[in-house]
Image (cartoon, rainbow, N blue to C red; front, top):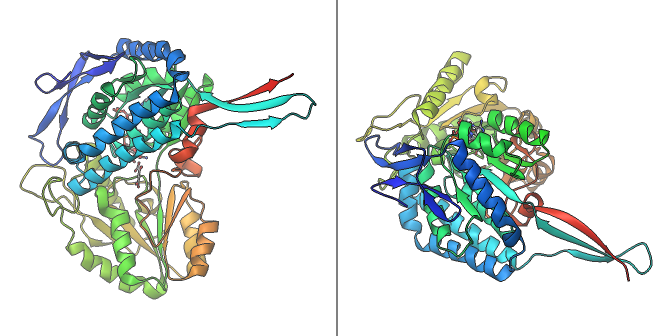
Length: 481
Ligand SMILES: NC(=O)C1=CN([C@@H]2O[C@H](COP(=O)(O)OP(=O)(O)OC[C@H]3O[C@@H](n4cnc5c(N)ncnc54)[C@H](OP(=O)(O)O)[C@@H]3O)[C@@H](O)[C@H]2O)C=CC1
Ligand SMILES: O=C(O)CCC(=O)C(=O)O
């Protein structure tokens, strides 16, 4: 358990000391150490995998009422403690407190949703083409699942992987990002008291290179669900496919936000600000390319420049902060690098462009907007993952659609328009997994599928009922008389 701000792994129903420890530091205030979190070595990861393997036969055939009750209990506790957990989340990741409380609420609702899914498991019972024979199609748990999660949604992403995995009868070993182990640890502590048998749920913290690598390559792990960068995701896929393990990847985006001439200007500005800068732009669904048609372009650029003056950057826990810090020094350097690239490529800086000084020492960056950009520029093509966006001018809707689809990614895509014709056409012809009409590209519901096309995602969808595609395997049984 936690001992003078030391936080241990949870393996086989026990709190286990780390092979080493790593400080979890508040990006809004680098003098604030949240705690020392355990780092696992390979032996500890293998112990967690073995515990999950041993627990699997009983858990995968356990009663659905017990599974429902345990998941529901987790959801209730998360919701009851949303303010306190939101504080922890804002402190370790840098999202503002309202955003963090919103994310915690989403996590609680996800556990409640999948508690319900335990009671809605279904299959098919159909006649055979052979007389006197019947056929059953049922779903069974996949097995032991390794969950590898990123830093930008420290409780919601673990929740949307853990809850369906357990609901459908799998056992899990989760490795959260080393930058944000606090929320995953708090979630593990709640799960440890909810009534799951030992070994069903295991938390091992530490680096991707050690913990993640063992999980991905262990022959005792039947599937990996990963969210993070494209480079790491693709390598995980290669390793999983080579040993025939199931794999699901959620990775980057370069999500377009189209603003058409007929858009409501005020609404378009608000949703563009939300898409590009809220959560410090650190969402795979964020939009860093605003594609604007010629008739509204100049008014839109001017209105954005004015609106951005009132965005307050500051300590994530301070009332009134709109945008908290960037998560880490490495991410800040990546954002600054792209600001330099934008300037050297010839885009015009409209707002922001550098770090911001606050009362505390942290990784504060001004929301940054470029205009007069070209679709071919690196700032228009590569995922930045920070509060940095650019505007590209196009002639009309057709050009906007073509530019929106001209990307290696396909996670989410938005359009601001008052035209039903263009909205409907965009819904049908956007090559993204999620389409937003008069809404920001980021900010999704928890009960419907989440995921993208092309380079953004691989494997079946996460969330909602569709999650069962990954976490279950189908069995066909033939019954003769
Ligand atoms: N789609 C999304 O939601 C996200 C996208 N990103 C993108 O990725 C960029 C880099 O962020 P970063 O955090 O470094 O992303 P990573 O892909 O490195 O990290 C995601 C998760 O994978 C783990 N990991 C890292 N290397 C390996 C490996 N070899 N085998 C198994 N697991 C591994 C990480 O562990 P650990 O970090 O503890 O070492 C973390 O838990 C961002 O700038 C952004 O562009 C980042 C986060 C989320
Ligand atoms: O936009 C959202 O609500 C979810 C975004 C997300 O899951 C991510 O950035 O990884």
